[in-house]
Image (cartoon, rainbow, N blue to C red; front, side, top):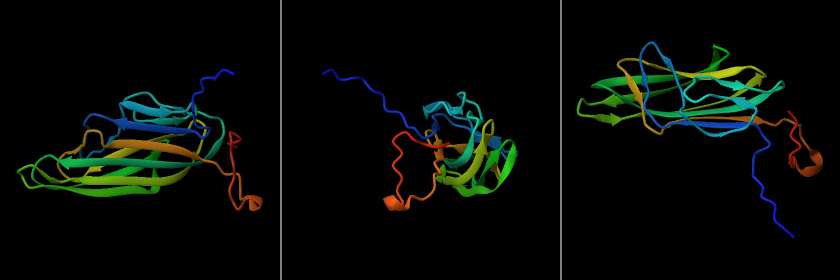
Length: 174
């Protein structure tokens, strides 16, 4: 009997992006970009250093979006980072996270560590973006701290015969 080489890939649509460099955010606000695709299923379209993650399937459903980033402030004083989720170029109501960064003038004393977690309904050709606006002088994203994870949430309903659990085994409804 010979062993077949198999590649493990999730059956649930998923994308994970991270940025290795630094990005500067001002009072005008800038969209985040990511230079590394850690993992991506074919249900998503993303090009490195772009600010849009596109849903590439013709169906619709709920997605879990998690964004994380740490910021330091350039220059003495206090600054706040306001991170907001956008869907198709529009602000998603309730999808905002705020963190403060402080610099004593002798180097960054504290940084804004932000996690934005949101459940959103998306359909084919929708795209999402994350925008950060600084309250004062420039804020700089920490190297290796900017991450975006988007995961499809399967919704098949409640299975009373199995204690509420559903065993997918590749039978994911989308």
